[in-house]
Image (cartoon, rainbow, N blue to C red; front, side):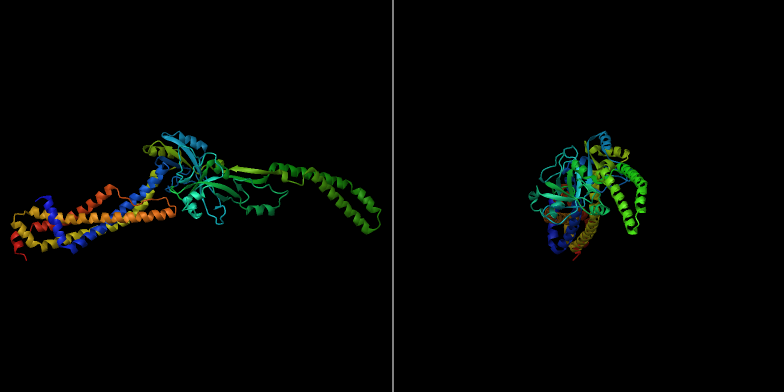
Length: 522
């Protein structure tokens, strides 16, 4: 018998028992869908992550952190405002050292900028922001601006916002309209960041200083671009030049050395004047002694004291010893110089060199994170989901295999007489065995094909809905469910093999039936 004969007979026998065949194939379909969805989610998530990395050419990026013990969080562009519990500082010296590592093309610092909040000019609601400062124009980082323009080196008071702020501001449907609008950033207290604080009044009181601590400084920035499909929709970007200014704290304080000198001179002058006051007491006593009226005597003494107090105060004013305002100086502290950068991003010449570069960075005592780390973290999450769904799919396929076994065993009982006729007409045991194996394989094959078709339809619907939701919420994902060719072939092959294996026992049993007894069977 030819393969076409086995296939034709198999399909005919399956069609004769429509209900049973339908239920058997349905079990295979459900199992196939579970397996397909599980694998496609894992593959799709990894593909989306890879696409996001490719959008910033991130597959050859290495992120360097100051603390080698901090675990990877899956974000290459993650950065804080510097500093480290280990004492390591990422500064320009570190950048120069990292550039000397073989296969490193370029390096650039990243800094997380802290502000209290921000709002869109003309609106009242404030939002928190995750602002990162970087150096535009390097070979390392290219921010994928979807609307507007890129930042340029030296840009001040300009910002690129992410999808989260775009949505919060109410422009997710028309992002082009937000370009050129202003956002207001709020800094904290009298220690101002990025702005010059107002000069205090003469001889400011403690009440004045305390009141200034509760005030917030306002910094205005122009929106020049929007990143909708970036690695992190909550990430916003400014230049490192402006970031350094924002991370420079400024506050008015007294020049302690000059204040000390002035206080010493003031005390010396007071002592000198008081000494002159003591020397002139005799003149006062002579006047009082000649005065018989007790009330006038007290008045003379009181006038003399007031006159000297006024004279001392006037002399201190003339010398400038009562005013300390001229000793106030604007104190500036470059916190990037003191704490270092939040992280440093390296560009490596090719993906094969990433591991060796990472090892060299670790030898310098710094932490390392690569694109592979990010992809692995995402894959771990979806792998867990995949295991759960896959386990369910495996159980369903196992039940489907039992259903195929049951269907084929029932077929041997129902077709015993038919088997006897086939044997009497010259069919061998191998022919009977192959026929039943072909039928079982066809059940598995049909289940896999139908399951694949339904999964593809569900994926289309799921991707369409998911893309619309993602677009409405500015989430940077698209077509998370994907079907590579190897997945299609593997699933159909798997269900077919399961069907063939499930049909082995019934096929062997059918082939060993005695022809004579089979012909007598009713």
